[in-house]
Length: 383
Image 1 (tube, one colour):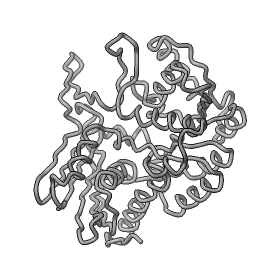
Image 2 (cartoon, rainbow, N blue to C red; image 1 turned 90 degrees about the vertical axis):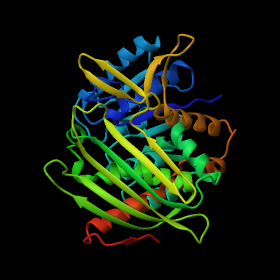
Image 3 (cartoon, helix red, strand yellow; image 1 turned 135 degrees about the horizontal axis):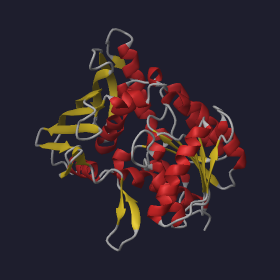
């Protein structure tokens, strides 16, 4: 079977755990995938040579854990270069895929170059900040006959799959409303301060739940109202109300998504998130922070999510990366491998995965929310 080489554009927290003691999500997946013979070489493009040095340090530690000698290359090698990913595109052997993990406003231009170079692409959320950018990428992807997906890992969370089953089985009846609370530690703003002006908390965090609500209900958004809140403790807090059209055309419901960066840096987890789904026949509640695992040490208390991204030995003693975060990346690598070997079609993937076309819906909502924020909090309608 053909197995792709992998280009990662970006070297930040989600790739390799920059700014934390961890290893991120993408890098452990790729080290394990290469160890298991699922991919070829790994190429990682950042903008600074120092980022490559940090990745080297992380890879050496992961090699020790996984019992593997990773074949990888980093860019740039000598001086700062905002377009080092173009060097990587020229160097990486084919067939190859790309994983784009860069600030929101760079998704469209970088993914455009990647598609033009003939690579299938996985883009972290949000897909793009604007519908015009999304449409251009969807058209280009179709012209090149390539596969594109967005890394909406909440679709892979077992708790959310139970929610989807519960809704689709009719146990909750017609939906009345959905409420979401999603906050993170204040330090997250510091980690992203270089590009914070190019995004907002709803675009960065809330988009997860826009896609999730569509995924579990099949509903489509009709209009959006967003309220921004700025205080000393909440410089970027947004309350977003969305009206949804359920698949049954006679039925509509609302969702309220509250997102902010106001949690204390000493809180017991990086994220605190809850979802409450109320129907005419019942209710589904999920606290996606308190998963029932808590670790108390001399340094403090940590509420651990054992289902997102965790590295440990499995029951037979083999070191692995586990969780719905890694699962979404593994799924993309598996899908592209099947595609390269003519065992699945683009039509099948686009119908069942968080494809570019599917992700366009969430981009419609974040663009509508931005319009609402800049038009005195008026309702913004979606065509």
